[in-house]
Amino acid sequence: MNFGLLLICLHSGLVLISPAAGLDIATAISRAVQLAPELRAAEERIASAQGQWYQAGRWQNPVAELRGENWRISSDLRADNPALDFFATISQLFELGGKRDARRAIAWAGIDFAREQARFVRQQMAVATASVFLNAVRVREELQVVAESTETVTVLHEIARRRVTEGRLAEAEQRKLQAELGRLATLAAELEANQSVALQQLRQLLREPEIEAAVLVAPTLPTPPVDSSQDSALVEQVLQRHPEYRAVLAEKERAQHTLELEQARRIPDPTITGGYKRTDHRDTLVAAVVIPIPVFDTNWGNVQKATAEVAAANAGAEAIVIRLRNELLGLLTRWRSSAARARAAQQEMVEPAASVRRAAQVAFREGSGDLLALVDAERVYLEVRRSALASWAEATLAGQTWLILRGDVEL
Image (tube, rainbow, N blue to C red; front, side, top):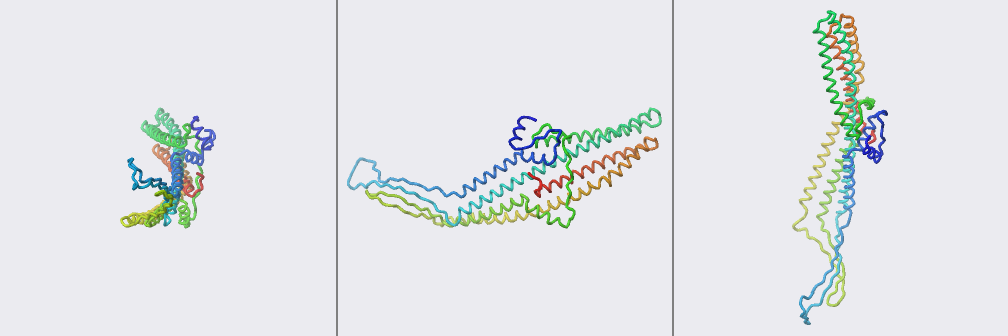
């Protein structure tokens, strides 16, 4: 473990694990989320939105004016020269129509939006980490299956070689097993390349360059809801918590408050001035009110723009709700279907294929079996086990994704 990673983990409050302790999927997700630079960027955007909310509620600064008039530019002092005048005034703009409250409401909706974006980043990083983790575990298990088949075929190839030497088997039959060994070696090389990519991705996510496939703990397949008639209700529950849905609600609120602000800007804001005046050697007070007259600019264009933005936000929210419902329903259906396949694989696929494989091996060892049938049985057994692993990985990822979206996984 390098020193830089140790400092990051201590600062983040992460718990380091040794390779011997194993790495489970929950720990991997937690560490990847906490170390993600995308999350730090999202959290800084929350701080930015909070600063904008604070600034939106500030009054405009008053304007102080110190002015002198009738300054002489020559030394000619005649009796009719005007006396020196002096003014000291303060002017303050007063916003009417709830403009300041509308600006604060817009900024508060921006905070809500930034928070939901941060939640979305957490969930996306968690799902991505789960996907990489499960891919690495699946490929590791596939490599073990391929290694088992390679060992079996190697033993059978040696039996075939002895029979060729004894003249009891044609050399062409032996070459079938030799070709199968070549195919298994190619498949193992492809899987090793895939495993290297998956491990490298996991190392990057966790900032841990020493993670190996052996330390990954295969997660338990989450059990999906059994009653499909409740799918719509379950989808609605997750939808209400989904950060994309909450973010679009914040966008709608922001658009509505922006419209309110643009409508309020049609109301002129007076500037009130008060102060001191000394004219002709006499001290007096000054008071004034300045009000813009909305003749040439009634803010009509900005109101129309804000109205269109509200309509666009409503339509966008409807589109996102439809998309999320479809995605969540598809995820739930896929989870249930792949979990059923994964649980049935052992009894319906692996055990029958294993029985055929054992029978073919026994027949070959006794000298009565067909070599081509033996190779086919070995291939079927290998592909069936790989299919079972694929179903398990798909179901586990779908289940983990659902739990993450439902909020059951701590991020």
